[in-house]
Image (tube, rainbow, N blue to C red; front, top):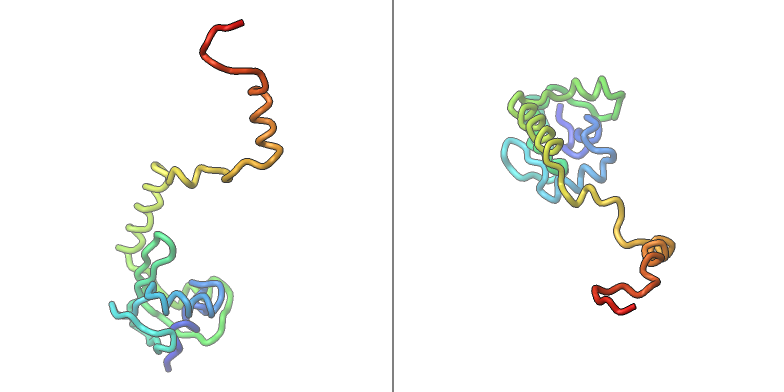
Length: 133
């Protein structure tokens, strides 16, 4: 028995929708046995998947097949993550915790009209370094 790769990724709850799984495979972010594949590629038990989700690189071994999406505990039995992958993922999480991306600390971009007015309230009077009273 074999299942399409995009359908298996969706059933294993690695991606929220099947179309998202298909898109990620098409973009080359998912490999089967170290080869770039298409979404229709059939996955078999024992295949090794490498997938990238954001900054996280995961290596999985297919343990079971399913055509339908089930509860999370059942979905987690469909694959096993390699110990090296788990270690790499925890190290990345620790690095991100200790040295976060500076841009991630920004709450928002441009100030709103109200925020600009609040910022300009203190600048109504002339401000300069000269002393002319």
